[in-house]
Image 1: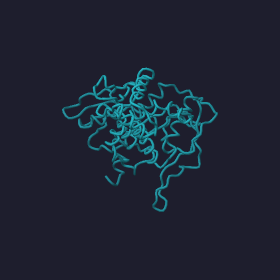
Image 2 (image 1 turned 90 degrees about the horizontal axis):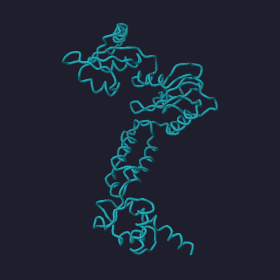
Image 3 (image 1 turned 135 degrees about the vertical axis):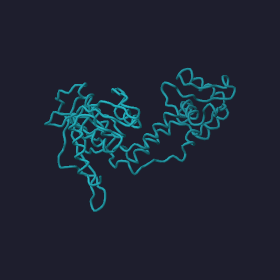
Image 4 (image 1 turned 45 degrees about the horizontal axis):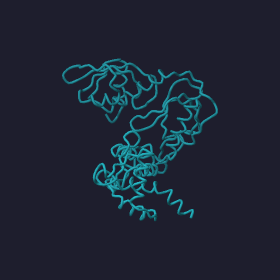
Length: 331
């Protein structure tokens, strides 16, 4: 008797699941088809009248957007809610992002992508049937990254310091090993998490210091939230100015630089430095822009784009770059 009661009470959920998995605008289902599918999947017998009654319940009492035969002359199908449900393009974007994300392990990527697939109906999943993780060789081996991000957000919200071990890759007997940078257990006051060039960083102040630095979250292990409260006087404006001054998240004090770039660099510069800079035409083939950035980060970026960028000022930076080029045996 109790089993029959459960089956009866579960009818509306059985029908909803069938509509989610097997129906859309191109694949409407009749009441008879839904009856057969409920029987096949849940071993529960219904009749078309019960199906229609429960669909009306889903529409009127629970607010599901279900198109009916009366409206479309074909059958029943479930529409996605524009305000609460992800559409196919949005789900695919999330899947692609997770697939390429180097800060998420291959196994964790599979689990997240699997959850995204569960939001699609069977016909949409068929289009992704041969989907696989792309470029898994660039993915981190650190399983703690997602938990680290969650814990750091909690620490920021609760105004607490964090402690962690910072790691890097080394070659040991010609094998890559991920190991601590030193025996030091770092303690920082975290202020903000940002993403730059497909990597997550936390901006914080190391205990005993008073300047902002960036730390790669995928290099952190054994992260813990401390009871010790953040006591550094860093305001939001200072944090934002620090973010705006960094190229590729190299920490350090920014300097004012004026550069001339080949016009072919404009997309690259705007994507890296943003649109809110003073861009001006220098001549027919070059543009000029003034920026405030970290010196070390700028030099590294400059050396990757030799021949396309010229430093106009300061003179001291030009001299430093020329010296670095002369010292470089590869040049």
